[in-house]
Image 1 (spheres, rainbow, N blue to C red):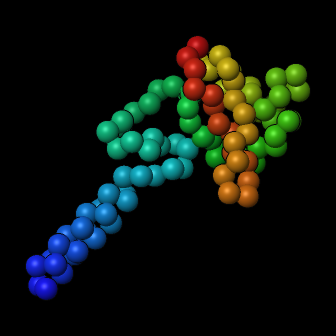
Image 2: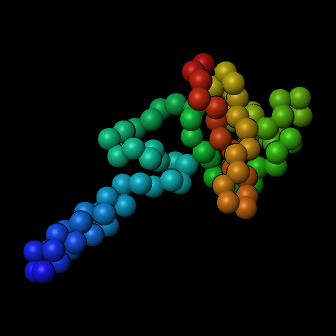
Length: 95
């Protein structure tokens, strides 16, 4: 019984410590082994504020998400839903 409790405690501690590496805030990468990303592509940008689908991701309307992403990502960006709100996401493509 004591061995089982020790194993559970070690597993719990490992999970808690690993949770710190999985930040999803748009400014850092989810993968802990990638320390610096210089491209805007494949990332979310909460710093741009609320993203309105059909407006902010529309190239014809010069949307803020589209304008922000298109210089580096040839497919531009779109408003990606996170929970109850949309956030600007730059498409996964190079320039």
